[in-house]
Image (cartoon, helix red, strand yellow):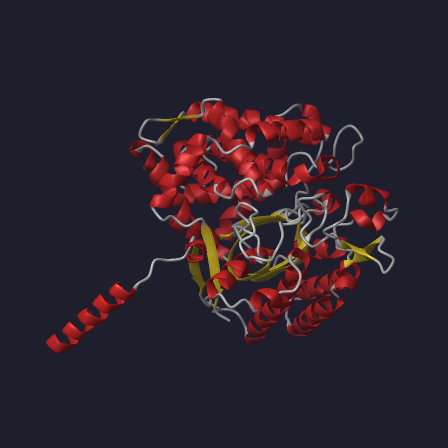
Amino acid sequence: MKRTALALMLIALAASCNTEPKTAVQKKVDSYALVKIESPDLSGITDNGKEVLNLYKFAADQADSIYWKQYFGDKTLIENLKDADLRDYAKINYGPWDRLDGSTFIEGFGELPLGANFYPADMTAAEFDSLADPVKTSPYSLIRRGADGKLTSVWYHDAFEYNIDKICNYLKAAADITIKPSVRNYLLKKIDALRTDYYYDSDLAWLEMTDSKMDLIIGPNEVNDDQLYGLKTSYEAYVLLKDLKRTEVLDQFKSMLPELQKQIPCEEQYKTFVPGDESDIYAYDAIYCAGHANAGIKLIALNLPYNEEVQAKAGTRTALLRNIMMEKFNRVVNPVGIVVLTPDQQDHLDEEAFYWNIAFREISHGLGVKETINGKGFVYEALGNKALTWEDAKANALGLYFVCKLIDEHKIPALITKEDAITTFVANLIRSERFGEASQLGRAYVMLFNYLNQNGAFKRGDSGKYSIDYEKTLSLVAEFAGIALKTQATGDYEFAEQFENQYCVLSEDFKADLVNIRLENIPIDLRFEFQK
């Protein structure tokens, strides 16, 4: 035993002596904490159901292939990199551009195109404006150059026909063996949608699929990769398993959505949208993510579909990814809060508060303003590439506003206080500022944090720690939500741009916060390893 112990000590000593300092790229890879998504508890799932889950994963892999083409281009250029660390970091980012600051980290590649690979890199605004094709503004089309060098629109179902055919084959196989009629209907409608780029019917079918413990979100949804016009949607996939107990708790809030819409803190003229009263709020464990869902900063919740007509008719589905959410709180949000908040307020950092803040942030995406009041069309049309930043900032502010309101009314089924909710919210804002100014999501957090900070919601002491004025923070959150809702309702692009430019600047205080956070080696976000 002594010899064995001595040998182990010598091996450990030799290993420590041979340890080389990590390279800059290795540190970047490590800044995304590795989370192993283990095989879930499938008790209660039939053998057919388990096979359906496998087919969902195969379909998700094809969505992943499409996303590589949309965002970057030829994935083999990344797979053939000899440097393993560069290859790993490029796979996290789905290309050679760092999603935190937009910089290029692999030699030989140019700057990140604002329009990703949705548009020709050399396309000018004048060219796009002069293209007389209504398909050019579709969320489901690429812009390419024809043989004559002129711009042309290409539907996704044509551009990605090979991968879409494979997705549809997997979904058809799943539809053939599922025992749930609602699942079969959704999958068949989704096949039609993928092959036509018309998603209205499949969105409704998805919202009608309420009796399945398994869920699949697949197709083009998010627009944040298109920083040029904010039009083009990215392919993604989530394979999800419903948490029935938590979903039952959330179910009570469905009927409250029309009333919450009436209570949003803005002028009455901006409250005309009536959300569908059939909205769902589900808690899930994510068991597989692909495409945009697996790129860079990972989402912990979603509110879909984005189609305003579907929302008005049938509402939305809020999906809380409970397992990812808790990993993010424990590995990132809570450690950041301990670094940047005063010791007396650190006690208010709370996992359940984080859960409910995120729940109502996502619910708030389905509330507010969807169409301008002055004939400028839908908000996303009027605000263009500013729309997503303002929507995310609005939802974050409204989410906290409603959580605190419902805590006062004793309607949140958890032992949390308003101080817990606000403290955890501020810690999450600060950690999310690390996403930087390169992404629309990052700008939303920077803008909201700076608005609160510059108006006295919290004060940074000489120790480098923030002290939160709870009453003022809540008042300013409501004030900010009102500004955001007015901006959306009026479709005021010029104001949106001016306000964003004023508040989307990383302050010297935050840069100092960033140094303190880095010294503690707190991850920026997560990267997944899935058990297939």
